[in-house]
Each structure stands twice: as structure tokens, then as C-alpha cells.
Image (cartoon, rainbow, N blue to C red; front, side, top):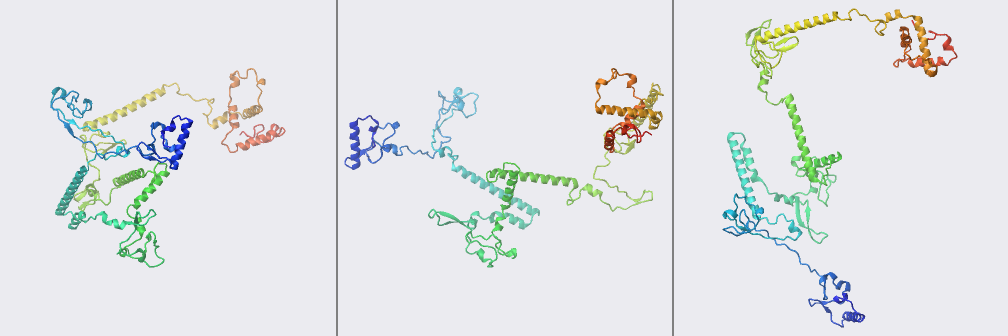
Length: 570
């Protein structure tokens, strides 16, 4: 029931009367309830729809809350009146801008050039009041309309300016072609072709019928306008009639396409149709394929480039890649040309100077010129260039492994020439250097003769200084054998683990007599010394282990060099 009384506290009798009234209205025995506008309210509307919400504070029965009670928000298609003036004052007014005198803005918002003395003090050149309008853009589109307030007449001016510029460029181009024609730089046919290009241009709209035809077709939506492609002109021969062989190129009647060439063996100059694939492989198709390959390759290398997700970024990266590639190729080509030259280019003057001459010259057996004029071939480098007062070039003089100038005997390149004085100075310098070296040698010889080491000879105690023959003459064979036995005993004690409790009291006191090493002991040490690079060292150690395992066989006899571990002293 569309009544506001349901929200009031009713007694039992009032609720009974209200319920009877609602039943009578539904049965048509009582008149329907009227809203605030005088319209009847359907009594069969449920109470949860007829009752207004509490926050609307509705005291009368109404269905207004179920209707669209908000007004539609619309924005007028108008904008600020730019540059409009409303009043021109002739003296300064209180509250106006202190700089220009306008009442439409404050001093801090003034857009005029700051005056040395503002209109407040000079009371001159008072600016007019601007028309201030307040627009409230309430809709979403109006707030984001970037062309709101744009005057279309401005574009007409720009278009006229563009047309004038194009006409001037065409006129300049025509004059340049005529001047080149008068000079003989271009042929007349080329001039006529260039001048007729602008006139021979065909509007792109004339080709629209060959690519796409707009036609009303029956669709699932009920006869909406769609697009039908690949329609041919009535005068053109159908694709399926170009070759009636059943084994020729396949024709799809649904899409009206024939991708392969129906007549591949026919002369290309006599064919008008090469297959739909021919069109698909021409134009910008190759560039698009290269772009796809670049995007895939770059994405596999770890860079965030995706053709479908970010096509603009992929296109920009591909353009930068092509520019870098062209720069590297150009730099490589320039380096090769600079290093090896260009054989197709005309020879320069310095190269022509190196070529053979037809001038006759005759020489004798000694190489002297008899007849004619001698022509010396010059290289591509500068020759006979004299600098710094020199009368000879660098490298014309050679002395003691150094190059120099023949005019002054200077061995310093880029030095200044002093003539004969330099030659004399160079000779005196050489003599002085030789005298200093002789004096130094004499002093070293005198110092050597006065040294305390004169006549000193090394003794036999210095190991490694004597020859093997002299060392063999001083050694006693019996002492060497005894030293070998003692060396073996020390090695066996060391392997078994020597007990320090059985060591003598003064064994480590450093007794000079006990610590002195004899030549025989040194020789025994050398003979028993282990050599890691010896290939027979492993075999020798293995043999020693077998001999140590026998019962006294190795200790009591037999074999060469008893007690010497297999070493025979000669």
C-alpha cells in the first residue's frame, strides 16, 4: 500500500480498518488511493515497493521514489567568449588591478607586462574589463573534450596556408627543372615526366571499388550493412576461367580467392593475374614479416618487446635497429674504402704521378744519364719538405745506428738546424762521450786492482764450486761407505720412530765438531737423496722394502755395495 501511515504507531483497531480498506480496494469496492500528483495508485502493488524509504521524509502516499526523479545532466555546446571586453574605464577604481587597472582580476593574476609605475599611481592606460564566465561541466565527456572551444575556421586557414605552400613548392620545382633543361643537365622527356606527375595523380577513392565494396547484405542481426570483399568488375575475366584444367590452381568459391598462379608456365608479360599470393608478398608485407621476426628474436633474447601487446614499441625498436645497422654498414664500407681505396673512382693526381712516363732517357753502364731527362717517380707522400731551417730531410744521415739530418748531424727529429756549428758540436759530443767512457773504464780497473779480493780463491768447503774431478780426488772411498751406512741407520731410525728419551744430553748443544759436515757425508747425502723426477725411484723404494722384509739378508751380505742400499761407489 502506497501510504505513509505504515511507519506510524497504529492501534489494533486502526490496523484492522486499514487492512479491510486495502482488501476493498483490491476487490474494486473502494476507490484507489491518489498520490500527491492526483494519480491513482494500483492497490495490487506490494507494500515494499509502494512505501517510500525513510530518508525521503515522504508524508503522503506516492510512487515518485520508483520513477526517474533526477534530472538529466546536459552541457551546452558553448565555450568562453575569448577576448571579449565588457567595460572600458578611464581612471583607476578601487579594488582593480594595480598594474593594468582592470577589475576582472587581481594584481598577482595580471598577465600584462609589469609596468614601472602601475595604473594605480599613473591613472593612465587603464585596461578594459574582461568578460568573465563560469562554466560548470558536469558530464564525463564534456570534462574530457579536447576540442571544446575550438574554432573550425582556424582549420580552414591552415588548409589554405598548406595549399599555398604546396603551390609555391611546385612552382619552384618547375623553375628548377626548366633551368636544368636549359643547362642541358636533363633530357626533355624527364622534364615532362616530372612536370606531369602532379597532373597524372589519381584520387585514391577511384581505387576503392577494387579493394572493398560496401553492399547491403543479409546478416544475423536482421539486414544490417556489411562488407563484401574481392568483388570483380563485370568486364574482368573470372579467376576460375583463366585455366580450365582441373589440376590447376584451386579456386575457393566462398572467399572467391585463388592463391596460386593459374598459369605458371605462361609468359609474365602476357598474364594479368599472378595469384592472390603475389599480392600478399608485395608492398609492405616483407617489412611486416621482418618486424615480426625482429620482435620474436628480440623477445627470445630477453628484451621486453612484443608485437601484439606493444606494437608501437616494437615498431620503434625495429626502426632504431635498422638505423644502427645502416650506420655500422656505412662505417664498415667507409673504413674499407679508406684503407684499400676505391678502384672504380678516378685516379688522383698523386696516383697519376706514380704512373710510367713515355719520356726517353738513356744511361751508361755506370748508371749515369747520357740523353734525355731523368724523371723521378714520387710516392703519394710529401717529399723533399724542409723544415726548421734544415737543408736536408730527416733520414739523410746515418751514424752509429741512428738516423739524423745530413746538414747538421742532428739525431733529434723536428729539431732546429744550426748548420756547421751543429756538425762540430755533434763531433765534439761524440769525442767527449768516448773520453768519458775510457775514463770510467780506467777507474773501474784501478778500483778492481786495489780491492781486497785480488788473488782470493774459493776453498773446498764451498759446496758446488768445485768440479766433479777435483771433488772425486779429495774424497776417501772408505769414509764414503761409512757415511752411507750411518745415513741408512738414521733413515731407519726415523722410519721406526726415534725415542727422544734415548737421545744424548748434549746432542742438540750445537757442538762444532759434531755439527761439522765432512765432504764424505755430503757425498753420501747426495747419493741417498730421493729424486721425484727419477722414473726408477718407485722401483728402488719397492726393492728396499722387499730387502727389509728378509731375515738379515740385506744387512749381512751379498750384492753389489754391501750396506749401501744397492749403490756402488766407483
